[in-house]
Image (tube, rainbow, N blue to C red):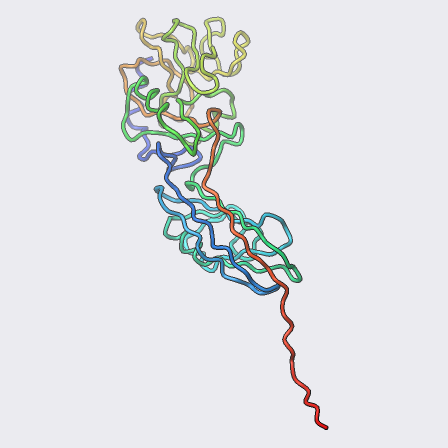
Length: 315
């Protein structure tokens, strides 16, 4: 239905961003993690673990540090300025995850120390991982999403652009929303904005299919599903979330592409490719995610007893 475009003009969000997320992934994720330098200390003696560093990327970054097993010691950051923790607090943690600007994260990484557990002797492994700070997966399916609104494009252009994007090894595609949980997750991140998603009936009028991702070629709506359906269609077995009376191919052939309407409802509408909109890219199910990781070892040796005094013998 064409009229929804009028509302959309006031609803466009100002910055592109990962849904869940707020500011990544981009078509070329660039974070590079340098792990800390292997080091040695005596049992019970804290030691600085130097060399951790993150370069590249854009916006905030997220880093996790953790000992590979519990009970061997703890990790502490000497500098906490500008950090937000999702686990741990940066002081005597076996594991921690934090985010901040690249400068603040690297300042914290430059202040890492490890304290062996009392009596522990052996080799400790500290695992590290970095990613863009907004790379939070949808808990319903483990997928990542990006809302691209740096310049409105046609559905066809959005579909091509999405297929050319990647996120840590995952290939992008226009979002395929297959459950209420996924619908709610995506909608909570785009607010009142409208956007293209990956459905089309350009092949056969009234046969709505997902065009990309793991669901490519799957029909989710047919006329037997009835218009305005919000839920699973008994005919296709697939989730739908249409606005009332949609899809309606308003004005004759040409409303062949799927949009989320403006206003915050999350409802779907069929829309012609002659209009331009932002779009939502989904990453998941195609390829496997590989985040920058590192491994650092701390060798903990037995403490050497130092005599507390000396007894002199004469005779």
